[in-house]
Structure formats: structure tokens, C-alpha cells
Amino acid sequence: MTALALVNYFEPWWVQIIKALVIFGVIFAMLPVIIVYERKLLGRFQGRYGPNRVGPYGLAQPLAEIVKFATKEPSRPTTSVGYLFRIAPVIAILTAVSALALVPFGDVQHIFGQRVGLYGIDVSIGPLYVFAFAGISFYGIMLGGWSSGSKYAFLGAMRAAAQLISYEVSQGLALVGVILTAGTLSLTGIVHAQAGLWYFIPQIVGFLIFMTASFAETNRAPFDLMEADSEIIGYFTEYGGTPFVAYLFAEYTNMIVVSGITVTVFFGGWLLPFGIHPPGWVDPFVVLAKMLLIITLFIWVRATLPRLRYDQLMSFGWKILLPLATLNLVVTAVLVVS
Amino acid sequence: MTLPYDPGPDVIEVIRAPAAGPVRGAYRTFGATLRGLKTTFGRIVEGPTTIQYPEEKTPVYPRFRGRHKLHRFEDTGLEKCVGCSLCAAACPADCIRVVAAENTPENRISAGERYAAVYEINLSRCIFCGYCEVACPFDAITMGHDYEMSDYTRSDLIFTKEMLLAEPIERTPLRREGE
Image: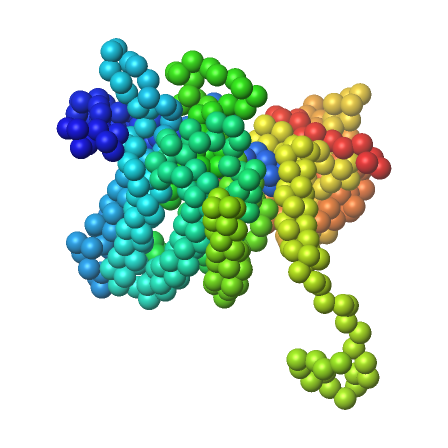
């Protein structure tokens, strides 16, 4: 137990299970809310109302849609590879949820005499864990596109794979600057290191690079080529019904994870500015509010920017973003050492 | 100046703006993005311009040609239509059917000698050109303002004289002239 306590596994097993269930439940309850929030906000950005027919203010719209998707007849192309076709969406959603475990919603609290950290796990390799699961989530996309047995799904999957690989590099390098400054890989440690100044001010370049790369990582506009609603050549072209919803939920969970990581790494996690120190139970709400702001930014950008062409996407990622991220890393390293 | 393409023999000179430097180029790129974000945010401030159709209706202009109406004299209550079938003759879609009958002193329906015993307009054929209105010598038929005429069967779209004489159930909002 002592070895595990070193990497912050100090809680008893049942507390960990309860934590996992609570985080999973809260975030999965938030997903439909975020979907309807996005659609309504997108409507406002375009001078219309968005969904407002189902339920009060259209809030029950995602419920209606989930029922619609869930009652669809399952079907797959005759050329598809059956078990991979079924497993791929599971991989996508599993990796998204696993990465969710890392977002810290608060500091260690004393609840009913137990020391409970308000996060899934606090591993000492923080961001590496996130990137590891982002790397595995790429299997969900790639297998889904390949096992569909359709040219278009395969093309979409190839583009998605290339995009994910290109932007993960810049995203990782942008985070290294923060890690160097904080001197720790633990996400709670990074939050504690921001007590004086949130990292988005000294690491503004890293923040911009990270955000840009995150838009690409989460398949959001203007980098949403891999799903490209208007062209309909995505890796999930052949999916319908519940597996399609799984991909959709995986995408939105990814968005939540990325906004959570952004809040943690650049916006001081549960910390509040101007020396305000609320009681511990407020922390998760502070994190959720900050995450909502980041998600609003995601939606705002989606409503504004047109989609990039594929070659633009690639040259932007490798020729502009990656050198910038490397330069940012080098400059930060020099400043930290000197 | 060398161009990356051959502009053809007609072009004598091509004037190009000076290439943007790194700072100016960055300003152009990010400036455009920020202006775009400002534009979309302006839409939120303006609010939606949607008209929520079944609840709100777009007001129509006074000369809007909607569903036909047949009229009565306001003082005597007699029908204006005298069954002359000029509207049916003028109709390019051939959707009006008039069968005339004689007025008798004990059964007086219209102001003239005859009246329309049957007056039907097949609205599934009508093209709302308004020629019937123009052709009518007594202003007995006019184009109204209703535009909600969908129905489930084609036979329901054949409007009889009673339906055309009745006031529309729901009034269509009217726009002021010159608006």
C-alpha cells in the first residue's frame, strides 16, 4: 500500500469505486445537456432559436434523439468485419471515459473521516496518461472506418488518423512548457503550482497552440474534416443507431476531457482569482463552470470558422503549429533553467 | 515581376500588393479570425430573426393573393355572384365550376337575375393568378389572405360556395400598405 500511496492511491478501494461512478454519472448526465446547449447556442450564433419544441425550451431534444437512435434497426454492410465493427465504437467511448478519470475537480477533501481526492485518479504521469488514451482512441476511429468495408469510411478513417497523429505532437509539446514551469507531471500538482498566477498568462503561446491542437484532436470545427457533416465522408459513415451515438458521445466526452485538461493546466483548475478561497465543496462547481466557458469557446469557434482543406490542415499542423510548439518549449526550457 | 502562371499576351502589367511580412501576415490571419468571432457574437446580441411559424405568422401584404372569398351585399345579405361564369372562363387552370340557376321572387339568393347554384373552386389546381377577381363584373369573388390550405385528401381541397362565403376561421395578419 505504501508504494501505491506514493502515487496518490491513498483511498480505500470502495471510495475509488464510488468516485468513479460519481464522475462517470455526472459527466454522462452532462453530455445531453452539452449537446442541447451547443445546438441552442449555435442557433443563436446563426440568428435562429435552435431546438425549442421538445420539452420546456427544447431541453428534452437529446432525449428524443437518443430514443430515436436506440430504436433503430442495427445494420452493417455485408463487406464489414463483424466483431471489429462492433468493438470499434466501444474502444472510442472507453478511451474517452478513461481519460476523464484524470480531470481533477477539486483538492483532497475530508469526507466522513476519509481523505478523498475530488478526481478519478491522480497519477504521477498526468498528461502522458491523457495522451496514451488519446492514442488508443485512434484505434476506435481507425478500426471503425476500416472494418466498415466501405471506401468512404476507410478514407475518412485515414484522414482522421493522419490528423490525430499530426496534432497530438503539437498538443503534447505545448503542454511540456507548462510541465517544465510547474516541475511536476501530476495534474493536481500543476494546479497547486498555479496558486500565484494561472499558466495561461506566462504560457500564452503554449495555451494558443494547445487550444488549436485540441480543436483538431476533438474533431471540432474548423478541423472537423474527419466527420465533415456536409460531405458525409467520415469514419462512421456506415454506422447508425446506438453505435453511432457511441461515437457521438465519445466525441463530446473528448471535448469535455480536453476542456477539463485546459482548465486544469492553463486556468488554475479549482483555484479562483483575487485570493478567493471558497470551502472545498465549491471546487467541482468552479471547475465545471470553467469547463463550460471553454466549451462555449469551442462552440463559438465552430459557429465562426469554415472548415480547412485537408492539405491546409496538414501543412498547418506540421509547418506552423509544430515549429511554434517546439520554439515555445525551447524558450520555456531556457527561461526555467536560467 | 515574375508570375507563377502565364497571364496570356493580353496582360501588359500585373500590379500586386506587397507581400505581407510575418507580423502583418499574422495580423491578417488572426485579425480575420477575431473579426469573424466578433461577427458571430453580434448575431447573439441581435437575437434570432426566426418567425416561429405555427404560433407567429408572417403578415401578408394587402394585395396578397391567397384563398378566394365570395361576398354578399352587406345591407341586404344577398350574394353578389350572379352565376355569369366569367371567372370560370378567365381561369387559366380551369379550376372553377359554376352552375347557374334562376332567382325566383320567393327564393331570392343573389341581386341579379340568376345566381350560382353550384360554385366550386378546386384549390389543388388553382394557381392563384387572380384572373377570376379581375374578370368578375360584380366584385363577387376576391382573393383573400389565407395561405394555409393543406389537407389530407384531394377532394377536401374542392371548396364549395358555402366554404367560400364563410369568414375564414383564423385571420391572417395583414401588413400595412407601404411597409
